[in-house]
Length: 230
Image (cartoon, one colour):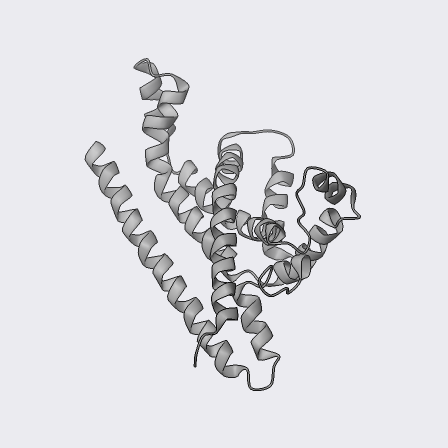
Protein backbone atom coordinates (compact mmCIF):
# COMPACT_ATOMS: atom_id res chain seq x y z
CA UNK A 1 0.00 0.00 0.00
CA UNK A 2 1.58 3.23 -1.20
CA UNK A 3 0.47 6.84 -1.22
CA UNK A 4 0.65 8.65 -4.54
CA UNK A 5 0.57 12.36 -5.34
CA UNK A 6 -3.23 12.32 -5.47
CA UNK A 7 -3.43 11.14 -1.87
CA UNK A 8 -1.02 13.78 -0.60
CA UNK A 9 -2.85 16.50 -2.53
CA UNK A 10 -6.13 15.32 -1.01
CA UNK A 11 -4.61 15.37 2.47
CA UNK A 12 -3.22 18.88 2.02
CA UNK A 13 -6.58 20.11 0.77
CA UNK A 14 -8.42 18.43 3.66
CA UNK A 15 -6.13 20.04 6.21
CA UNK A 16 -6.43 23.42 4.47
CA UNK A 17 -10.21 23.20 4.42
CA UNK A 18 -10.43 21.97 8.03
CA UNK A 19 -8.17 24.75 9.36
CA UNK A 20 -10.09 27.49 7.55
CA UNK A 21 -13.44 26.03 8.58
CA UNK A 22 -12.38 25.87 12.23
CA UNK A 23 -10.91 29.38 12.32
CA UNK A 24 -14.03 30.89 10.76
CA UNK A 25 -16.57 28.84 12.70
CA UNK A 26 -15.19 29.11 16.25
CA UNK A 27 -16.10 32.77 16.91
CA UNK A 28 -19.47 32.36 15.20
CA UNK A 29 -20.21 29.19 17.18
CA UNK A 30 -19.21 30.89 20.43
CA UNK A 31 -21.51 33.82 19.70
CA UNK A 32 -24.48 31.56 18.88
CA UNK A 33 -23.74 29.33 21.89
CA UNK A 34 -23.73 32.40 24.13
CA UNK A 35 -27.08 33.53 22.74
CA UNK A 36 -28.65 30.11 23.26
CA UNK A 37 -27.19 29.73 26.75
CA UNK A 38 -27.76 33.21 28.17
CA UNK A 39 -30.51 34.95 26.22
CA UNK A 40 -34.27 34.45 26.43
CA UNK A 41 -36.23 35.63 23.42
CA UNK A 42 -39.09 34.63 21.16
CA UNK A 43 -37.87 32.28 18.49
CA UNK A 44 -35.05 30.79 20.54
CA UNK A 45 -36.32 27.27 19.88
CA UNK A 46 -36.40 28.03 16.15
CA UNK A 47 -32.79 29.23 16.21
CA UNK A 48 -31.77 26.13 18.16
CA UNK A 49 -33.54 23.91 15.61
CA UNK A 50 -31.86 25.68 12.68
CA UNK A 51 -28.43 25.32 14.27
CA UNK A 52 -28.89 21.58 14.77
CA UNK A 53 -30.69 20.89 11.48
CA UNK A 54 -27.53 19.68 9.64
CA UNK A 55 -27.20 16.90 12.23
CA UNK A 56 -30.52 15.33 11.27
CA UNK A 57 -30.63 16.11 7.56
CA UNK A 58 -28.85 13.76 5.15
CA UNK A 59 -25.53 15.45 4.24
CA UNK A 60 -26.46 15.22 0.55
CA UNK A 61 -29.54 17.34 1.24
CA UNK A 62 -27.41 19.94 3.00
CA UNK A 63 -25.02 19.98 0.05
CA UNK A 64 -27.91 20.35 -2.39
CA UNK A 65 -29.31 23.29 -0.41
CA UNK A 66 -25.89 24.96 -0.49
CA UNK A 67 -25.69 24.35 -4.23
CA UNK A 68 -29.14 25.88 -4.78
CA UNK A 69 -28.26 28.91 -2.68
CA UNK A 70 -24.70 29.55 -3.85
CA UNK A 71 -24.50 28.25 -7.41
CA UNK A 72 -23.29 30.89 -9.92
CA UNK A 73 -26.85 31.25 -11.23
CA UNK A 74 -28.38 31.79 -7.77
CA UNK A 75 -28.77 35.37 -6.43
CA UNK A 76 -26.44 34.76 -3.47
CA UNK A 77 -23.82 33.04 -5.64
CA UNK A 78 -23.98 35.80 -8.25
CA UNK A 79 -23.63 38.49 -5.58
CA UNK A 80 -20.56 36.81 -4.12
CA UNK A 81 -19.09 36.42 -7.60
CA UNK A 82 -19.13 40.19 -8.02
CA UNK A 83 -16.60 40.47 -5.19
CA UNK A 84 -14.51 37.61 -6.55
CA UNK A 85 -15.75 34.88 -4.21
CA UNK A 86 -16.98 31.67 -5.83
CA UNK A 87 -18.18 28.82 -3.63
CA UNK A 88 -19.75 26.16 -5.84
CA UNK A 89 -17.20 23.68 -7.24
CA UNK A 90 -14.33 25.46 -5.45
CA UNK A 91 -12.30 24.70 -2.30
CA UNK A 92 -13.98 27.69 -0.67
CA UNK A 93 -17.26 25.84 -1.02
CA UNK A 94 -15.72 22.85 0.75
CA UNK A 95 -14.91 25.20 3.63
CA UNK A 96 -18.51 26.38 3.76
CA UNK A 97 -19.82 22.82 3.69
CA UNK A 98 -17.45 21.86 6.52
CA UNK A 99 -18.56 24.86 8.58
CA UNK A 100 -22.24 24.05 8.14
CA UNK A 101 -21.82 20.37 9.00
CA UNK A 102 -19.54 20.95 12.01
CA UNK A 103 -21.32 24.01 13.40
CA UNK A 104 -23.92 22.13 15.50
CA UNK A 105 -21.21 20.10 17.23
CA UNK A 106 -19.21 23.21 18.04
CA UNK A 107 -22.21 25.14 19.34
CA UNK A 108 -23.31 22.22 21.52
CA UNK A 109 -19.92 21.83 23.20
CA UNK A 110 -19.55 25.57 23.82
CA UNK A 111 -23.12 25.99 25.04
CA UNK A 112 -22.68 23.26 27.65
CA UNK A 113 -19.50 24.95 28.87
CA UNK A 114 -21.24 28.33 29.14
CA UNK A 115 -24.22 26.89 30.98
CA UNK A 116 -21.85 25.22 33.46
CA UNK A 117 -20.42 28.59 34.57
CA UNK A 118 -21.92 29.82 37.84
CA UNK A 119 -23.31 33.33 37.13
CA UNK A 120 -22.53 34.25 40.75
CA UNK A 121 -18.82 34.25 39.89
CA UNK A 122 -19.44 36.82 37.17
CA UNK A 123 -21.69 38.84 39.44
CA UNK A 124 -19.02 38.86 42.14
CA UNK A 125 -16.45 40.16 39.68
CA UNK A 126 -18.90 42.86 38.63
CA UNK A 127 -19.48 44.00 42.19
CA UNK A 128 -15.71 44.44 42.56
CA UNK A 129 -15.74 47.03 39.80
CA UNK A 130 -14.82 44.95 36.78
CA UNK A 131 -16.39 46.02 33.50
CA UNK A 132 -18.46 43.55 31.52
CA UNK A 133 -15.64 42.98 29.02
CA UNK A 134 -13.17 42.39 31.87
CA UNK A 135 -15.51 39.90 33.51
CA UNK A 136 -15.78 37.96 30.28
CA UNK A 137 -12.04 38.04 29.57
CA UNK A 138 -10.83 37.26 33.09
CA UNK A 139 -13.59 35.10 34.55
CA UNK A 140 -15.89 33.62 31.93
CA UNK A 141 -13.47 32.95 29.09
CA UNK A 142 -10.95 30.93 31.17
CA UNK A 143 -13.80 28.82 32.57
CA UNK A 144 -15.31 28.03 29.18
CA UNK A 145 -11.95 27.60 27.42
CA UNK A 146 -12.08 23.77 27.62
CA UNK A 147 -15.52 23.84 25.99
CA UNK A 148 -14.27 26.14 23.23
CA UNK A 149 -11.32 23.84 22.66
CA UNK A 150 -13.57 20.78 22.58
CA UNK A 151 -15.85 22.48 20.08
CA UNK A 152 -12.92 23.48 17.89
CA UNK A 153 -11.54 19.94 17.89
CA UNK A 154 -14.95 18.48 17.03
CA UNK A 155 -15.40 20.98 14.24
CA UNK A 156 -11.92 20.25 12.86
CA UNK A 157 -12.53 16.50 12.98
CA UNK A 158 -15.90 16.87 11.27
CA UNK A 159 -14.32 19.00 8.55
CA UNK A 160 -11.60 16.40 7.97
CA UNK A 161 -14.18 13.65 7.56
CA UNK A 162 -16.93 15.53 5.73
CA UNK A 163 -18.05 13.80 2.53
CA UNK A 164 -21.72 13.99 1.55
CA UNK A 165 -22.32 17.74 1.61
CA UNK A 166 -18.89 18.44 0.14
CA UNK A 167 -19.13 16.17 -2.89
CA UNK A 168 -22.66 17.42 -3.62
CA UNK A 169 -21.72 21.11 -3.37
CA UNK A 170 -18.21 21.21 -4.86
CA UNK A 171 -18.06 17.90 -6.79
CA UNK A 172 -14.95 15.73 -7.12
CA UNK A 173 -12.21 17.68 -8.88
CA UNK A 174 -8.69 16.31 -8.22
CA UNK A 175 -6.38 18.98 -6.87
CA UNK A 176 -9.20 21.47 -6.39
CA UNK A 177 -12.09 19.97 -4.42
CA UNK A 178 -11.05 16.36 -3.88
CA UNK A 179 -10.60 16.03 -0.12
CA UNK A 180 -9.24 12.89 1.52
CA UNK A 181 -12.65 11.22 2.12
CA UNK A 182 -13.62 11.90 -1.50
CA UNK A 183 -10.28 10.53 -2.70
CA UNK A 184 -10.89 7.32 -0.71
CA UNK A 185 -14.35 6.99 -2.23
CA UNK A 186 -12.92 7.61 -5.71
CA UNK A 187 -10.28 4.90 -5.25
CA UNK A 188 -12.96 2.41 -4.26
CA UNK A 189 -14.81 3.05 -7.52
CA UNK A 190 -11.77 1.89 -9.55
CA UNK A 191 -11.11 -1.83 -10.00
CA UNK A 192 -8.00 -2.68 -8.02
CA UNK A 193 -8.12 0.59 -6.11
CA UNK A 194 -8.62 -1.07 -2.73
CA UNK A 195 -4.92 -0.78 -1.89
CA UNK A 196 -4.83 2.96 -2.50
CA UNK A 197 -8.06 3.37 -0.53
CA UNK A 198 -6.62 1.41 2.39
CA UNK A 199 -3.43 3.49 2.38
CA UNK A 200 -5.42 6.73 2.43
CA UNK A 201 -7.68 5.35 5.15
CA UNK A 202 -4.63 4.61 7.30
CA UNK A 203 -3.35 8.13 6.59
CA UNK A 204 -6.71 9.53 7.68
CA UNK A 205 -6.54 7.49 10.90
CA UNK A 206 -3.02 8.77 11.60
CA UNK A 207 -4.16 12.37 11.18
CA UNK A 208 -7.16 11.74 13.44
CA UNK A 209 -5.00 10.23 16.19
CA UNK A 210 -2.57 13.12 15.89
CA UNK A 211 -5.39 15.63 16.27
CA UNK A 212 -6.73 13.80 19.33
CA UNK A 213 -3.34 13.65 21.04
CA UNK A 214 -2.66 17.32 20.26
CA UNK A 215 -6.05 18.37 21.62
CA UNK A 216 -5.52 16.36 24.80
CA UNK A 217 -2.13 17.97 25.35
CA UNK A 218 -3.59 21.42 24.74
CA UNK A 219 -6.51 20.70 27.06
CA UNK A 220 -4.10 19.72 29.85
CA UNK A 221 -2.17 22.95 29.36
CA UNK A 222 -5.37 24.99 29.51
CA UNK A 223 -6.51 23.18 32.65
CA UNK A 224 -3.10 23.75 34.28
CA UNK A 225 -3.22 27.45 33.52
CA UNK A 226 -6.74 27.76 34.87
CA UNK A 227 -5.78 25.87 38.01
CA UNK A 228 -2.70 28.03 38.51
CA UNK A 229 -4.66 31.22 38.07
CA UNK A 230 -7.19 30.28 40.74
